[in-house]
Amino acid sequence: MSAPSARPQRLAEQIKRLLVDIIRHEVKDPRVGLLTLTHVDVSRDLSHAKIYVLPFDPEKKDPDWLKGLIAASAFLRIQLKKSLMIRHVPELRFIEDESIDKALHLSKLIDDARREDDQNAKARGDDPALD
Image 1 (cartoon, rainbow, N blue to C red):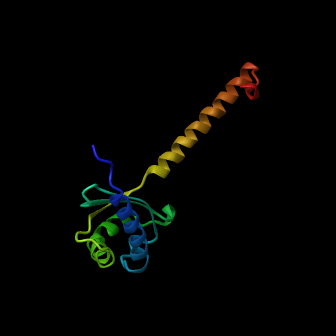
Image 2 (cartoon, one colour):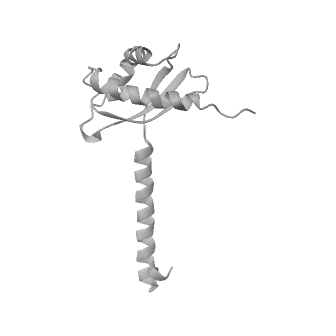
Image 3 (cartoon, helix red, strand yellow):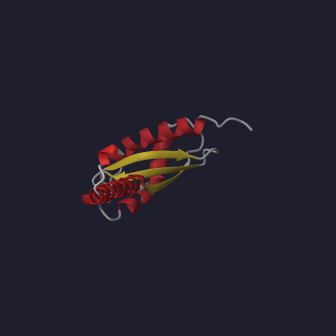
């Protein structure tokens, strides 16, 4: 079994850096707006790239922001081709990153459980500081 190649990771970092600049300066679709690219994952054969994105301000986002980004994917591939020194630019697949929302939800659940434990300990007369 061979060791995993570092090439997909290097390409993912390059794609992420370039896409941030291209989206910010060259994509004209008003649906897209300001985005945060959280992670890029390139397949081992370099044929596909999953780009995880979030709207910069979720409160002001256009409901079709992801559709606008998907519509711009062909343009983005062309722009990447101009900057990358590879024969074939991976197919781009944009995915809304939900990891931050999940992390916030888990953190809230933990805080709620701790608060409930503290309340139960006080009701029993225990000192939670001794635990």
